[in-house]
Length: 356
Image: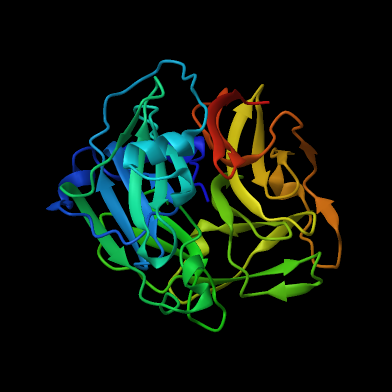
């Protein structure tokens, strides 16, 4: 579910929304979150939260604007147990949904459900550079929201996939998820400061391991990426195609054909992705449910032919990172370091790792 910004898009945070103006439209009061899912940072410490239960995106002013250039090294064992203790509940009543790094402060923010089922409460937890946990109060915070009008109805099985991932790109919040339309796989670009959320674009792509075109499979995780000076969304789906989609095509009501450039193996669900540069080359790390963490060579992605025929593993090559085990979420801190959430059940750890 992550929401990692490519370097060019990170630089655009300051140019597309002036500092101060990023929070001018936010009003103080209780944040109207019904759930806390995918996260992404925008400019000036504004945190975007995907609220699937409320079918909305909420912007929160974290007030976290103290710049830091120091190297980050964190290791918090049993992070979910510590969150549970802070919130006065048991570890099995905590569900960690996503994490994101504030590019200004390098502090980590985690979205959490306190409790299980429809009565679970949304919580945002901050972890600072020393590994200290604190709760971001949602009772009196500057916020704004925008509603997704064509989300699946409450009670529909697809409601939990109304928002599967989001990111901030050049003044817009890009939101992936499922709509209530016939071609339900949806990507929408929502201008910030918020006004209204248009219908978004319906996405179709060829799925080589399923040997068919698909229109109802949701993007599970995505990242913005620049290819030949054009902005794309690199979207990963279950079983595991990697699809590039031009950001410029994300018009309200459009039907967009994505280009499948990799098939990374069936029986697998992508969990999170980041991109980074090392030794003059571009790389992507993808955490997966059953195939570990893949490192993909991301130079010259335009050179891979579209996959339009049945296939298993094809396209962009990858290698499996054997030292990166049990990774559920990952986020880039800088081009040398990432933070990962790993483990399962009551034993989940938060720690930094050197990028391979």
